[in-house]
Length: 403
Image (tube, rainbow, N blue to C red):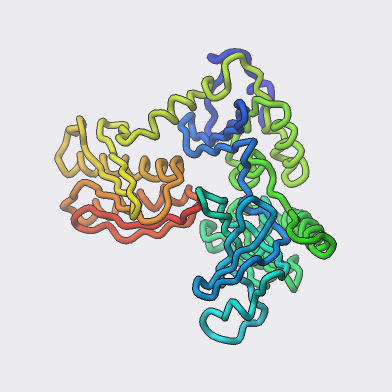
């Protein structure tokens, strides 16, 4: 157990960075959550109090229009704009036919349907919906309509097999589960507790759906700070620093339910210097979001985003090395691999990404850079796919759009 007194702060100079930590700060109308490793900003999340994200929320909606030409339907979920539900996002029980079903056979105007939001409304577009319901917890994601069992690919094969055996014993036979990376080393009792928590939520959703008239909210995802702690925090984090009493109580109470052994790592920050200033987060945000981002040895990367893709160019800059050109290029490229992944996470870049590493003559060096890139991507919770590094130094990759 960490010493709580070690994290009580009064002045800026008293606040030493931890190995891994989460910082939660309240601003006028906003909650900001930062993830840091050794004082270096890795991810930033911002929630607006007047327009909170509805991703993950579950509604009982009413079908307004069915559009066969778009293979989609507009659904009223009680917001200003109707939400969009594509036929490929409609769960069909025991589907026998191949290919996409006819949406006019699945939905009709006026029909009630239970849906979950997968994308927030943006611009003139309404939210994006699915009827494949999933309820995430700290260790598990409950799939109430499925019987599928999935284990995080980021876990080792031996650990995945151990967890698979436990899950097959504890899961309800009529429901599916996804085991998250945070379940590493979790015991059967912990998974049972997590499952009981999620099934209670699903039963409440099911009962509400039977009683309420559409459109109606059935389940709301927790506030941003609790969601980040749920999805990210594990035993490798030293602390969660929180500058507001409200967020402090929310996080503390949540962890007391799902992970009591981590609740003691939530610390109320009471320093005179604003938390994000004390941890040097604001400066890092400004620097990190520039088009040109410096690397430790003097090189830099340039990030350009277009409608079709994001291009990232690697340059040696002022770095000249002290051995050979190949060694100089290798070091710059490996530093760039780490910074590129950090930038993808910070900026939440999705879609097609092209990384133009500096040309390397030796195949073993190209493999070393690709290996470094893949190792850094293991830290990224968002799904990615990387194509092999070419002789020209180009890497093509995709990263799932989550915003």
